[in-house]
Length: 591
Image 1: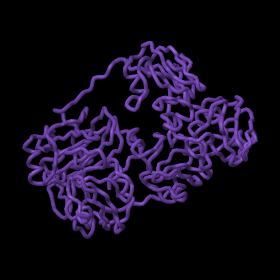
Image 2: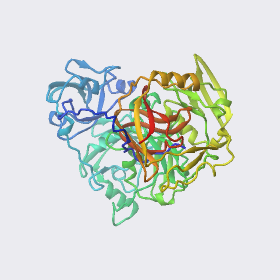
Image 3: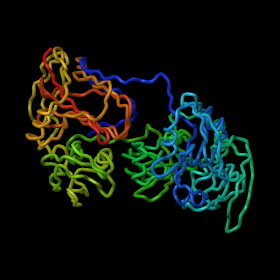
Image 4: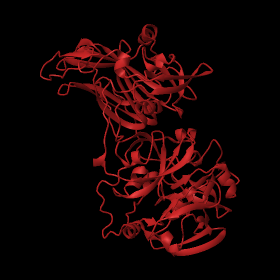
């Protein structure tokens, strides 16, 4: 089973003394930075608010010590242009800013309270900005949760927490908030923007509808700490240990993937697995659910799901908001603690194994091109190499990470339903998924590996029923080379395995070196660009030695890899990101 990443901080260390890539870094960041957090809005919401241009950016907050703050921009401003540039379907606020540098003087065009305005600002750089994270005593809290809100209609229907600001205002469950502090409320992001823009103790003015009657109310907004104290009748607030534990594995999506999946809030968490005996399991959360909020809190550029969870203690109850198969849903949840969680461990004979690997020789606008492993579930289902998977069990497959999630959350013997493209023809297949052992013709894994004796060289290892002479770590030299055209052609002709000899992905500081104390090799590199990333190592027979799907990834990576199974011989390393690939030949030689 592929390793799961709990943190995304790595440094892959393929240390090859002869191979070193370096990346120049500018001493000064000259990129233009305006200093706003903003949201894209739907065409219908733009029309409802009276914005002629539906491609602008709706400001949700202002970053400190930036051009936006100095220039007087504010939440709920709708930015649609800078100088002569205008937002459209191909150019958003970030694209417009890319035409300028820090210190440039520009005119920002925006709507405020329905009126078109322009403001002269001096752009700055991100390095000058400041941010402040609020404590529970500083965080304004209204005490409402979303009650089946219909998007793109005026008003947000809410439920009210006891002992909250909302209750002090006289709000009740099922009331519809139409405006806060004079700003129209269309959806929950507007609620979050209005509350986040306030300070504890300020007066909040709310317009709302109850049974067809329009009402108004005002009251000082209280802090989250005070609301929790009143609700829970606690004398001490904010003494959280590890915080509430939801109980999921999840991935953060790129903006492009969130758009493809139809998620308006791109800052949520895409569930890749649910941990046993946790609040998530009891609440019915499933893989491929997209969680974007808890109670009145919503994920955004300034807070992710983890930040929201730290607002709660184990044992507290809340309502979690998520998208499942394009439908907005919510479930009541009682948070647990990490110590209560039950983790399931599977060996290779219990682990579902579909039997496909990435086909990096081609790109595809929809789905994931694959190669098929012999005797696998994919082969029995009728799939062929170069087919393109577009859905598994009715979940859309956007990248390799989705394939991993779909397979990892099945059980051996369960039917897998796969839709895939072959040329221009769509095919659907259903087949009981096999285990790794069944695919490889193994009856058990007890004899697959023997324990290393690190004091000895030349330890015999048994892998898939065959014995190989392991590497002598006291006398091994690693040589990483460019893959030749002959290597590529030989793998394609003899193994049907496509590895391009041309490198299209920029990988910096690639290193690989042996660690005799552990009997492993240390691999490291860094990726300057962001995208769906996968690392694979193959032997000369085309068998996968190492396979690590990082999901959406950028930055430094490191891991320990075992490429000693075939002794002093050749291996092939690929790092793929989106449609770009780096392929290298690894030669293990006697030192």
